[in-house]
Image (cartoon, rainbow, N blue to C red; front, side):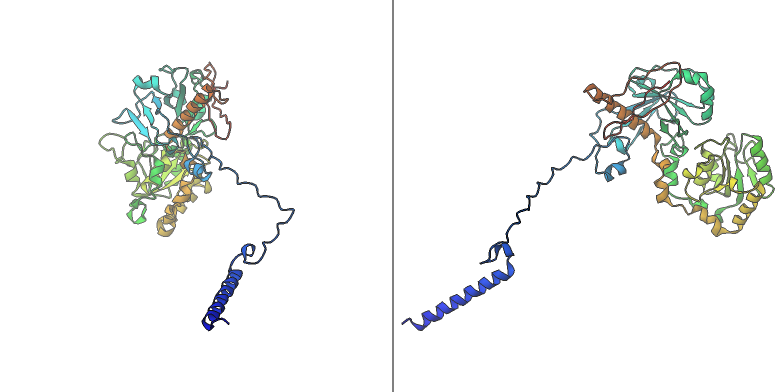
Length: 425
């Protein structure tokens, strides 16, 4: 007969084992519960395929906007070993002969614009700073077979269509305000404020209206700087000044000689315009996207431009920042509207409620600085040429320069866009 203490020990061990077994049954998955068989696998069940290998992120073209590249999960290639160099055949900078532009899509590679002829031999392209096609002359610089020949047009774009010398120059690409014909579209806001700086007009607008926009700082109503006295514009201005007090500082209808272009009365036009509520901003001609300094003088100064010109002007200015003359039946009707704004500060201030975030997303703003767009095109062309040397299919052909005009075209291949400039007769 067993001793009592041994019997009590056996009962305690059995109780512990039963508790552990019940706890495991309640907490463990069904497939591993103690004393239970795992669930049967259905006969029709197939083995899961292995996960796909990670795909490499796409390589973005230098022409792609950095934000778009990041959104697509892509990345730029390695930084180019050599700088992209562009020659300019005229002295366009003040105090310096060269300027380097920082372009994000170039991954830190220099984008150098030089006016030194001694460096033209190493340039990827040489640009004729023409501005006005009516003043075109035979090109005074030599271009190698591997170099491109560009031209800058700032006004009178239509004149190139009928200019034989312009066609003989056989430019490979055009930089200008004509969005349709220009390989490098350059809205006027992408220009620098002056020859002394590389800060663009677009950068200043993105800072918002200046303090002088406050109507309490205004001492005048309407200011005008007009030196091209075309009849239709003078007629409009004469009728408008019958309703609105006008200070005309230009050659046309001049009644104020305190702000001349040169001499003892020379002044800062933007600073003076800030003391007026409105600025007369009628273009010399009405052409697509031909928006010039006339409208930006007002916006930079804190005055509201009264505009007539390019049909697409609203793409080039902050929303609500200008007054369109064509929306009024007559100069007199416009004048009465301006005088109502003189008496209504709240309505006047509404013209300076700029949505800078929306303005910063505009295509026109994205083109700035235009020098980066040139370097990106040339870098892409250089990459396409290198790929062609290694058996690629998208190498750019050498420019065929003849006696006819030139037109830029774009070729696209693969998943990365390649912009190649070729000549088309």
